Amino acid sequence: MPNYTAPPSFDVLIIGSGAAGLSAALRLPPETSVLLLSKSSINAGSTPWAQGGIAAALGGIEDIEQHIQDTIRAGNDLPDAAVVRRVVQAGAEQIDWLLSLGMPFSGESNQLHLTREGGHGARRVAHAADHTGRTLMETLLDAVQARPNITVQEHHIAVDLITSHKLGATNEPNRCLGAYVLDLTSDTVNTLRADHVILATGGAAKAYLYTTNPDGSTGDGIAMGWRAGCRVANMEFMQFHPTCLFEPRAKSFLISEAVRGEGGVLLLPDGTRFMQNYHPDAELAPRDVVARAIDSEMKRLGIDCVYLDISFKGAEFIEKHFPMIQARCLQYGYDMTTQPLPVVPAAHYTCGGIMVDEHGKTDLGGLYALGETSHTGLHGANRLASNSLLECLVYGQAAAEFIASQLTAAYLPSPLALAVPDWDDSQVTDADEAVIVTHNWDELRRAMWDYVGIVRTTKRLQRAAHRIALLRREIQDYYAHFRVSNNLIELRNLVDVAELIVRAALNRHESRGLHFTRDFPESDPAQAQLNTICTPQPANLCSEAPVVQPVTPWNEPLDESSKLKTKI
Image (cartoon, rainbow, N blue to C red; front, side):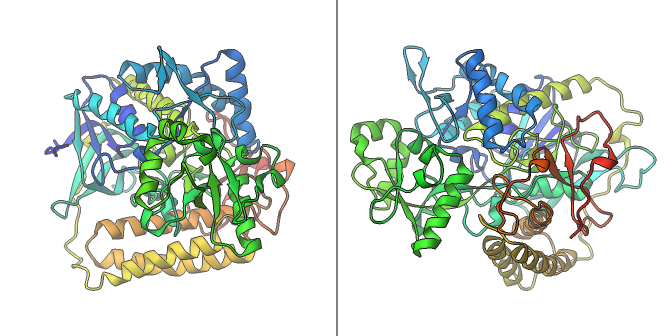
């Protein structure tokens, strides 16, 4: 994909080039000027890694109602029921839209093949073999390339958002005006301006040492939105995928949920199944249950991994349903048609994020968050398998339609009328010791893995908070004195996200879904509808514990008496 020279301003700036960003760009009117940024090559994000599919209730009213209940059950009663219904009901429309773009779903005779994944009560996951994400990206990119109003810039990473309050215009509500963006091909920071800015940068699983995510999943959008003044919710709920191939050369290759959906079983080294001891749905239990069960067995037996076996289905079945997984495993000497695969849990999906309304709007005027960057209320305490791509598509459309309705509105004064200074790096120098960034990156991710992992304790979380505070000071000092680089920007974002995760985890005094703490091992029914919300402090340090508060309709004021004000 070629780079283009950006004009001084656009109608819409989209930061992130996965399913959420691309679908929003395509849903905008063709006369809209759109700049879409990718911090690496455009197909290097998380979307191409998605193997499973897109959850869509295509079987009528009964299937829709069951999908809604499965989503709420998987989310441990924390999902917003109205949001769940709105997203699930839009599933068929999103599949039809993708088919209209030429998406080659698996199936025969105009009938989609639907698979089943953990937590689903029926087959409802539309897929393209075992490479749905890659095929989805190819479909969306083909459509983007045919749209002359969409300009794509690869190898550009956003440094920070530009807001009216940062520029001193504090008499009006705060509004996003654009972003400072580092061009990685020239090492220059450019000023990009837009009436509307969409954050679609993915999640923050790279905060952990072991993850299924690509290297770019560093929470950039969440951190930038937080620093700009947006509320962030439910960051304690980091999903660990149960089945990551245990093979150092594979760099955390995910073994799809669909393998278990099609009959795969989890085994101990001696060949014994164990999931039936943890949940009545055994291998088809929700991901948080399966991940904790594997972690428990590994700790109990002192073993490095467990095993996932589907070899009994035969080579023909496996090569038809899982051709990509089988090919990748063969590269490392594993043949899933004849032997079990060694697997371990790894950080996978960020269920929390920037709080948004039904249009993807954040607290900041002109700023939107989509996909894994956002907190819509869909996932609650645990994401149901294959709901993520559905959420990207539904909210991509919702944000685009709302923005389209606003493009003709007159802003008085126009946000683009404010003078925006260029990036000033005259007071900084080139970094003299890059090892500091490398060391802090490693220390942060190891602390998160050791202290804020699948099973937590208050003492571990407090230790993590202490180390993160020290790292934050070092990173901020480095940021203040040296020119920005890709690694420094990502590290700065990761330390913000790590602090949000730890503070939220410390303030939830129960175990629910993905947040399991030995100090509060049971779920508290009184907190079944309480979100953990971090509201930015003046210095954006989250110096006090976030407030745990109930789900509140977006257009209604918060009831201060309903807040659970537990302090650390």
